[in-house]
Length: 482
Ligand code: BG6
Image (cartoon, rainbow, N blue to C red; front, side):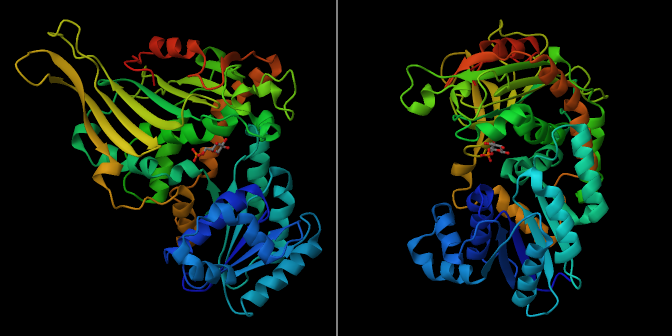
């Protein structure tokens, strides 16, 4: 069936995600001759748009070069668009007729991308199942977070999806799993003796996993206020990174072996307590240069004036197994901070029996996910020259310098291509999701029930000062001010 033509259906085609990610990704794959041939694309949404209007709507995000115009037009000639409601079956009948027309009544595989708000998930998936499935090829469904807002609602969604589709047909996207350096974690860890043999509590003092963004909720306040930073970033993106850093070595690179190991390590984590957490919420910076910088979270008109929703969170996670007991894994993420950055810092323990009178620093392996993929190892060396002083330096693998001519695809490019190929390795399995909610649900409920106050921090700052202290208390030494 892999050789059959494909039809890619984008639900929510007129929305934000489709415009910013899905259509651009499909275009880049087509441009680079990576999109399997033949593939046709059909958008579906409530807005009555012509194809030309959809094209214009997506244009700024497609990044078309002057010499690509002919190919770009060719790409749009593969597209169709059907307008219809999400809650009435007649719309889906129309869509299905259009899909059959596109496929000329021949056998074809279908991929359904749900770029939709969670409120319409149930009805859309039910109608896909009843009306739009390919009867003579395979069907795959791509779903985006939020996968519920706690363990109960997530289970309800999982049960609903499981009543319609097999797990092999479901592709739950966590786009961090499509990022170059996140995928590289497996190789770094298991392809290097020097690292694999020191990757444990005997050598590592602490692990810091960071996500920072230099902008606030930017008009997404309505969505954000309902979810908060813990659900938006920590429970998914950061926990996925943690599981790849901490899991045991899988028996092979088979997707299920890998996913088994990720689930296993999550099972060794207890649900978080309030004392493991630190919460923050940004306030406007009165000296900010832009209106955005002067605007605090609560000044967003779509956010209630009394909201205590955190826009910054730190969690100290302990993994209760032989490899990691007592090693703090510190996750921290925040909006409206001083920079855009996602990285992992593996901090090694102090060298025992110090002979350098305290001037030695800890080794640190830094895996920078973005911006500018890099892997560098901080180590001590003798200062060059006549002196016998010691200093810290880096073994530096900065991709921009080492791999000048390599094209690093966007996370969505890899992941959408994986769906065509039927590889679920970099997608979230239902039991993995269940474990993630088990760890975070009690604390989320507690924070909401008790309206736990968040510490204010200024737009454009490094976040609440208390966070630095919490890092130090958890055996992570700050040598810089990252
Ligand atoms: C999304 C979050 O999942 O990830 C956003 O909902 C966040 O709030 C985004 O901005 C970050 O993704 P990236 O790839 O830009 O780091």
